[in-house]
Amino acid sequence: MNEEQQKEYVRPFTCDWVILKTASKIKESIDLSIGKTFERQLDFEGDTEKQSEVFKTLSILHNLRKQIDDIEKQCRTREKERANVSRSTSS
Image 1 (cartoon, rainbow, N blue to C red):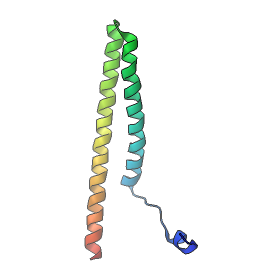
Image 2 (cartoon, helix red, strand yellow):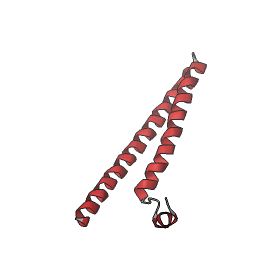
Image 3 (tube, rainbow, N blue to C red):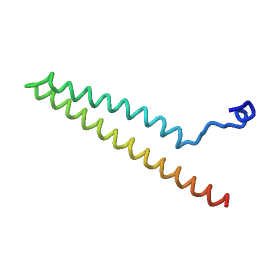
Image 4 (cartoon, rainbow, N blue to C red):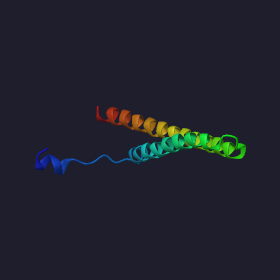
């Protein structure tokens, strides 16, 4: 990119773009937590209270992951709608 192109280049910014980038990082953290929590259940064989806590934690993490997936889906839908409107108005 030459100097003039660099001046004209604008990094993308929309609310949905920011949310999608943030959601991606959140999902990485949730997935890591799910894996580590699942591994911990082996530490608590015979301790029903701790095993119950592990499964409760996994359930909450999976629900949180689902909520993030739903938010991403909404953002992608809005981005597609925005792109369609942009195409139709530029014609």
